[in-house]
Length: 475
Image 1 (tube, rainbow, N blue to C red):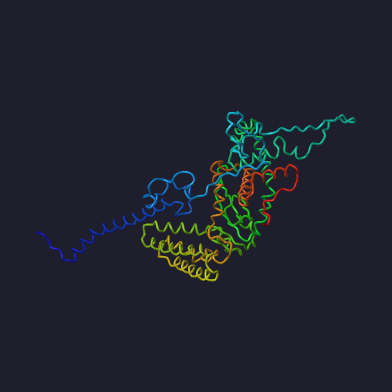
Image 2: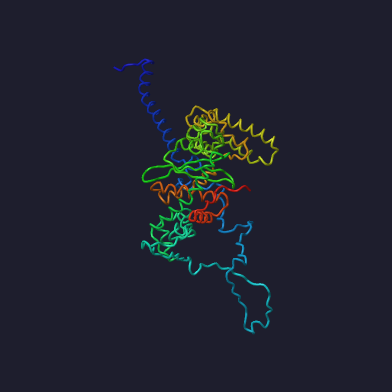
């Protein structure tokens, strides 16, 4: 006999059958959301995070408007751009001149010579690219004791040894600015200069160069606490399997300087050591916790980097959750309005611009703080709740840039050097890197010749004179 079921029993049976399916659907939905978030995380690049551009494995697809263009832009100068040509060498720099004329009377019959010439200036290496100077100190025998003594040699000659100051500066420039290994420098000296040189001699030469740069490096270190504005960043530095940290301090502008230091620590101890406990200037930096701790404990003012923040907000737009995406899109729109106004700061009356800046600042701040209950959005909101005013320092203090891009550009050289040289092996290597990086970056910032500065440093070091300064003279 078949049994009939009541309505309640049917509902119960259906619920019991459906419950495992609903549970499984919920599990799959959660897994799907997790996987989509993981895909978004793995697709992070330099545009949506703080990852360096070198981490972008493949180039992003061309935008649709670019895909529809016919053909490619031709190489070289583009239509409408002014042509750039090298200026000719002045007469004082010309070592030899050759004159070419027609000499055959048949050719000259119908030709009238002009006081004008077709000129080709040609640069060539000298036949011998170095000079060898022999310094002889006569030996003497003491009549009373028979001991042998030598006439004194110039101090700078003894201190320099085999390689003079210009040759030492060249090797320092090759090692520091050109990322050349000792082996590569040896091959250059042998093949081009025809001057065999050992790796040991090169290492000793770099040690002398590092010592010659010590005073100018220390001078900039002493000037750090007195800077009104500086940008700071840090990056990893390998040494014999250990991870150290390369710190960079940039006092901006052509009258400023860039100073580097390699340290085992990435903590506020480094900031206290070089800026001091009473530092009250402005620091441009990313949102790393070390800088926030220093901000909380001192009288310093911060300008947190908008480039880092914008990349983090762009990442929100790539997430699968529509609520988080909308929050990111609305916040990006407000930020774009802020920087449209920032770029018009010279085209508006100052008072009017300041009022507009305060309005857009408040709009960005409120939009950022009122985030949906999603972890990624709340992370952005928490930044503004705790440290929001330090994103807007640039709006009311002149000379403050909204990003830390200047210091990050200086750090690119370190990243290249780290990739090629694989780091250092000890304290002497660290001192060399700190000092040559500082000299190269500061000379570039001030528009000076780094090679000339190295040459002057070596001349001063060998002769015991005062080391040239890396602090720029007032304009």
